[in-house]
Image 1: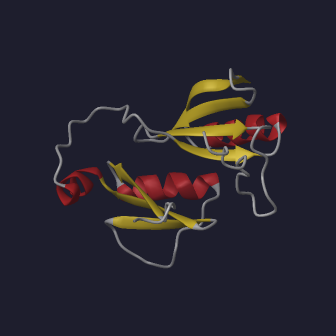
Image 2: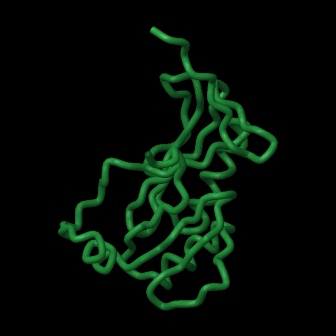
Length: 147
């Protein structure tokens, strides 16, 4: 059995140095590990890795088809609608492409999306259904009882 946790998310990027600079402009702090081929950022218990796209595909044994949408997004949940608006504006000033401006969404929250220089989608969201805990993590509702 595997533990139910994510310890590292790795994004395949066209240019590690340029992507590292973009994430540093967002305010993310790179680790002390120095390499031209990879960068790591501490994300409150999870690590974000940046690795050359072709090298990542080779490492995983898959084809690098160049498609932009990978059927996945990363998310940063914040504590208010105003924080979402400010977060998206900050990402825009750092060079992100706002692909979906913040708006009221069907699940009762407020969110928008930006794409990093390689097209990886990031959602910035306020979710009143899953409030943030004292460490900024999401608080999930308890599991449903037996059916």
